[in-house]
Amino acid sequence: MTVLIAGGGIAGLTLALSLHQVGVDCRVYEATETIQPLGVGINTLPHAVRELTELGLQDALTATAIPTAELAYFSKRGQPIWSEPRGLAAGYHWPQFSIHRGTLQLILLDAVKQRLGADAVLTGHRLTGWDETATGVRAQFANGQTADGTLLIAADGIHSAARARLYPNEGPPIWNGCILWRGVTHGKPYLTGRSMIMAGHEFQKFVAYPIARATDTDETTINWIAERKFRPDQQWRREDWNRAGRLEEFLPQFADWRFDWLDVPAVIQAAEQCYEYPMVDRDPLERWTFGRITLLGDAAHAMYPIGSNGASQGILDARVLTREIQAHGVTEQALHAYEAERRPATARIVLANRGNGPEQVMQLVEQRAPNGYARIEDVLTPEELAGTADGYKRIAGFDKDALNARPPIVRSR
Image 1 (cartoon, rainbow, N blue to C red):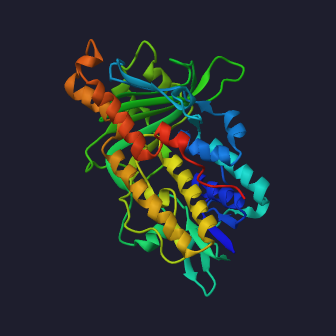
Image 2: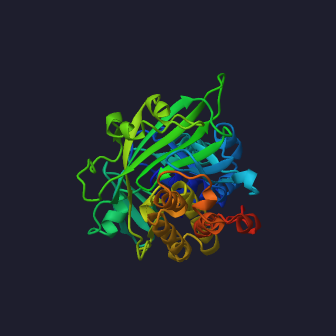
């Protein structure tokens, strides 16, 4: 009994390692010809780092990733709004890691090849369709090849071919009017040296966090995001989902964002490359599982990059699906049990992120004190500050006490 996994991204590779952990045969089929360390920085939250740790990957992560020490919000003038410790510093049993997305993917890929064998991941296999057979499912790929398995898991991303076949009238991802310009810059550490910062408000924002340890210099590798929100009906290059950004289209709006703790325009101008991404998501679905196929990761629940949750939720998907396969066998029953837990949980996060998630405190400050303030207590109540953050943690599944107390999702054989 073999599980076919369409997609060699973070969610698909985590699923492969998890299934191997419990003794279930699987194979990964990746659309690209070569898996390369593409993208920019991401955060893996403690609930996801716990799962990667239980897969034996914490040493590899620790060798390169930054254990985030704090999350801090600031106004567009660089005035502090609110901050909190993160990861180990907040009392979690596991760190929060900031890491280059491509680095994390390669850590997972290397582990899959070492544990499952070099032929466990086949590249150049873009899923185009499937048929159910008497004993399972036969997947079809754009290169003309087919593969037979017992179950097919579609982890093929926000532009999922499987989702498009299941929901042919859905259309493209939904743009909310925001454009993110993202880059990586080598620069001086700021604040704690392990701080994730967000400055601005809903319509203009700057996010930065270090993603790699310093080597023989005193510089760090800073991932940054400059964000502007336009009218959703404004004409933009929406057909391009990962293209080179143009500094002249956003740098002037950040020209005076020079804080005493970070020079934003200098960080932007020092980037080796800049990429442009529309902020998009997809509506929650009423169903993921159809016979012997189900959706996983961004294919199931693409969400706005708010709250550092996209990759983490894909990792949790993989672990819950593995637990259900361990409990019910490689069966349709396992797929339905997985969906029953994960689909409503991720739908809540998709909708919470549309409401600006925990970053709503920044918009409240902009609305109430656009010209600055002497004390944040004059602008926001303590209940507004703490309630926003704590409520989102509960929705996203990384409430500290609950996470520290719960048993493992997957128990090794």
